[in-house]
Image 1 (tube, rainbow, N blue to C red):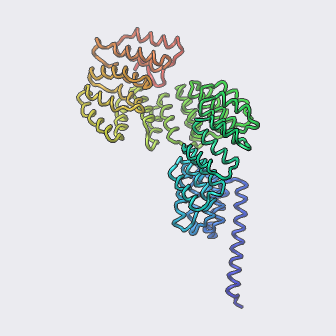
Image 2 (cartoon, one colour; image 1 turned 60 degrees about the horizontal axis):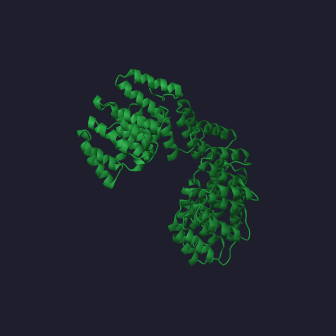
Image 3 (spheres, rainbow, N blue to C red; image 1 turned 180 degrees about the vertical axis):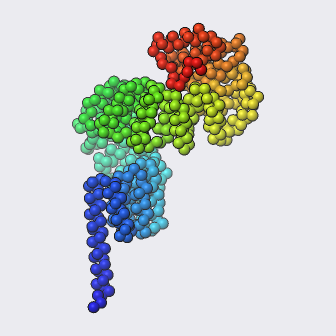
Length: 562
């Protein structure tokens, strides 16, 4: 007997709903276990039974991927597999992406821009998370457009929308817009006040207005107190920051970490360590602040000791914390430690972003591992002047001048406009010995951000004595913040002067270096090279003796017979 069509359709729907319910239960189990591999298996099952277009299942899968995957791409693939995404799926996706970092925030805005094309109107649940993405990206233009959309769609009466707008304007530095919106609000809650306080805290300016706002608040929570604390820290007023910290009725890890960062930013490392040691709870930011504080203030041993302690405590390092450890190793100049920290980063799967790769280039170059430095440099998609400087100076310091000069020219080849024109004119003069005009052009071409790299190239300049003398003279006229790198470069250029009557240039530059950087090992090596190059072995030996007396060790990879 044939089953009626309506009954068959009903049975099919019932069967389909049962499968959806079963898969939804599996996904809830995955959420409880917080297992990415389990989510992938459940996703494969959804695909096998052909339910990838179900908005409810897709929303759950997307949220799980966004929470558990280091990349936003799996979540985006889930969304893209739904042929007819509903408003609820757009909202879940935009919300998930809005808190996932810059790349995910860009995806959130991209999905938001697709809604009109699909004839789907954003609602009062969409706009706040779009604004969160704008705030994350500091995209004031997109935030202003979302504000206009909120006004047109009548969403401004939903309190989370103006609250998110105040937060977005504050984070984008538009404090007046944030204040104006706050003043226009008919109703406010503690989130409204906190958002405006956060706008003041971002810059640390006008904390008197922030204090008045704080005093006027009908109620406060830990976020309120933290906003005041952040504002004083950003304004450099540690006394007021500490007063707020001590007066807090309750503190969370953000409170402790903010105060800790205030101390490390102001080089009060001992005070920071006392606070760090009594913190009831530490997060990655707390550990990183202390590690980088030590590394940036010439205490590399303590930085590495704390980095190892963080690993033992089970806190997973990220690229920022690892960069602090790499910087500490660079200061110590230990090839063994360099190998250890690089292997650690690889073993832990730490993202090699541009900051970490640049630090690795600098570390390997200073530890004498030039091939490793070159390998890390080539992994940087668009090296900046800091990356070039680190490798150029490393190559030049270890006698690989030809490679350093090639790299310097490669760096310059990316320069555009007038700077490119000046560079080409200077290069045309270089075959004639980098005469005075060429040296002037190159000097004018060097912006402050490029001085370190120019320093590395200066030591290679000048096939003729006059060019080398000009390089040394130019080094003396550089601003002090261009630092020893430029003077060291000029000193190396002066080393090979054959005109012994002018040979004092090299020693004069080296003397300036000792005044500028009395503890820099490279300055001893430079002066030793000057004396040894002239056969003044007694003077060279005195340099070695001075190093021994002061406990200064030679640079890795440097040979006394070089």
